[in-house]
Length: 313
Image (cartoon, rainbow, N blue to C red):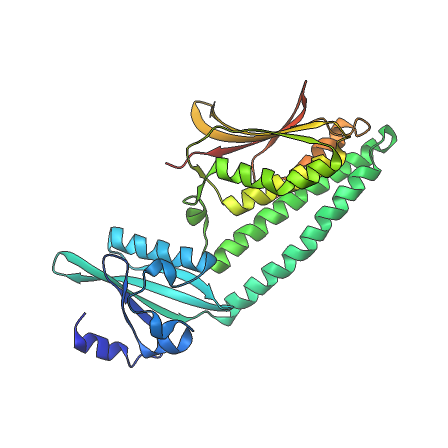
């Protein structure tokens, strides 16, 4: 980058960062240094160390798209509770792409308010999920069949609402469905992590947890943290329904669905004998909230809930 170009960027009020083709910072302007706590030490750092969490992912994805296509890419970034709109552009010298420049401007207040609203909606939805779970237990008799159907309908409405708030979150944060489709999930790592978290709970309840996973599986598409949260919630629900001496099986394997390869995560447990099958399925639907495709199947070994995840291309 020329000295004249850097000099001009120094006068901008908006934060600017410039990187080389290897993904290292070669320049930040004074506005960048003043805005971020690490700003003065940013020069020389890899791009991957600049920001945290989802903001880092949005930033790195934008940079990768610019480097691949040479086109300008817009994205959203949140850092230290503050929102930014980012514009990433390539720096070319003749036919060579020699770097990338990112300019950050403050996010409009309207987007910040949308983000706040989305978080405010999530809280009562979580509470509603718990209330539906309790209601399902209270209508677990043949006399309450009609009420049980109403609970099932309410669950489906909650699933739709959670999916909508997830899409709203993606729009506000810049983590769009295209980004979600590029996230890589290690199925074996996710299943083992969940099993480790409930090991003590299983021991206290006298429930045996059997883990059926190969040493390695192909990467799947999905948010690993979210998958783990869903599995953890389902496991804890099953543990509460089991009697001492029961066995829960948590598995991951590679299967073909309609000729396409998938990784399936499955959870098999007997559940309480006095809980009707319909209510068990309602509770599984509650546990799997979050937009996952899942199926509930009754097998000789118990009730199975299966989540198929497409493979990473």
